Image (cartoon, rainbow, N blue to C red):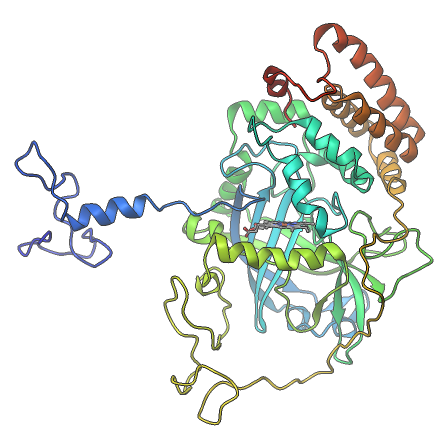
Length: 522
Ligand code: HEM
C-alpha cells in the first residue's frame, strides 16, 4: 500500500493518475531513511516513468513553433460577387459568420528550441473548426517554394538540415542542392533577402503556396491561391539585426506572440484569394500548378474574403501547440485539391507522419478533433479512449452497410465535382519551367537595402562553397537579372581573392576540415 488511509483530501490535493492522494512527494519509500529503496512504490514509478516519456518525436520539419486560438470571420463576398459564385464552402458564406481557429507558426529546419532568428521560411498553419468539420490551410510566410515536385522534398530537407556526420548545417550542402535544382532560385532570392528573417510572427504574411480549387454548388471549379496579410504591417530583419536579437533572446517570436495576446493586443490578418479559371492557361509563361511561381497581381488581383483574429493563448503548450496536427488533405465541401504535384505529395505526408509522431488516434485529441459531431467505424489502436458513436447507434454495429442500426452514408446535397482526367503515366517535369524570370522580377522589386542585404548574405555564404556551385549560382543570377548576376559575380571574385589567403574554399574532393564547417551557418 502506498496511499495513506488517514489522509485529508481537499480540492487541490495532489494525486497520481489513478486518483490516489499523494501524502509524500519529497521522499522515496525506503528501508530506513538511508535506504535502500523498494520497488513497489507505485507513486514514484508512475511519476518517474511518465517523466521518462515526456517527449514524443518532434516534427521532422517545422519542429519549433508557437500557437494561438482565435476566430475567422467571413466577408461573404469576392469583389462585388457573393462568395457562393465560386465556392459553396460554408466557412465563407454569410457575412460576419465566425469560425473558431487554431494557428501554429513555426521555423522549418532546426529542432525544437532552436533560435527563432534564423534565415528560414516560417510556417503559417491554420486549423478552421468549421460546421462541416475541420479545414487546414498549411502555409508558409513566403508565397512560393524551393521545389515543384514532392519527389524531391526528402532530398531538399536532407541538404538543408545538419550534415549527417558533423550535425552542423552547412551552406555548401544547401547551395549544392539549390544550384543543382534551378527551380529553387526564386525562393533562394527571397530567403537570402530580409524576407528570409521575419521580425516576428505577428508581422509576417502567410500563404497557402500551393494551388487549390474552389467548387460552387453547380459543381464548377476555379483555381485558388490563399494569402494572409497582417494588419500589424510587415517587418523583416537584416542579418545584423537578427544576430543582435539572437544574442539576447532566442525565443523572441514566441514571446512576442504570447505577450501581445496576453496584453489584449490581438493580432489580425486578412485572408485574400487569387482566382484563375480552371485550366492549363497556355497564354501564361508559367504553369498555374507550379508553386515556384507568383501569380502576377495585375492579372490575378487579391480579393479579401475574411479576417482572422488571434485572441487566446494556449493553456498547455504540449497538448495544443505540440500535438496539433495539420494536413493539406484536410478540406471541407466546396474546397478541393488541384493537380499541383507538391500538394498531392504533401497530402500523403502529413497524416502519415502524424500517425507516427502523435499516434494512430491523434484525431481524438481535443486540439485536433472537429468541434462538430464525429461518427466513424474506426476502433482500437494505441490511446483510443472512446468510440465515435452516433446518438442511438447500435454499438454492436461497427461496420457499414448494415440493417441493424449502424451508421449510414451522408446524402450528397450539391452537384459533385467530377474533373475528367486522361493521359499517359509518366515520370516527367512540367513544361514552362521559366526558372529564373520571376526571380529577376522579384530582385528588381526589392528596395535598395533589400538588394544590398541579399547580395551580402549570398556572397558571405557562397564564398565558402565549391567553385562549381558558385559558378552555377552566378549563372542563375545572370539569367535572372543583369545587375543581380554582375553584383554576385564581382562580389564572389573579391571574396574568393580575399579568402584564398585567409580561408581556403572547401576542397573539391570533399575532404573538408571540421573547423571550416563550424564557421558556416546558414
Ligand atoms: C510540416 C511535409 C511542403 C508548410 C510538415 C511536416 C511534414 C511536412 C512531414 C511535419 C508535420 C507534423 O509532424 O505534424 C512536407 C512535404 C512537402 C512539404 C512532403 C512537399 C512535398 C511544404 C510547403 C509548405 C509547407 C510547400 C508551405 C506551404 C508546412 C508547415 C508545417 C509543415 C507550415 C508545420 C505545420 C505545423 O505547424 O504543425 N511538412 N511539407 N510544407 N509543413 Fe510541410
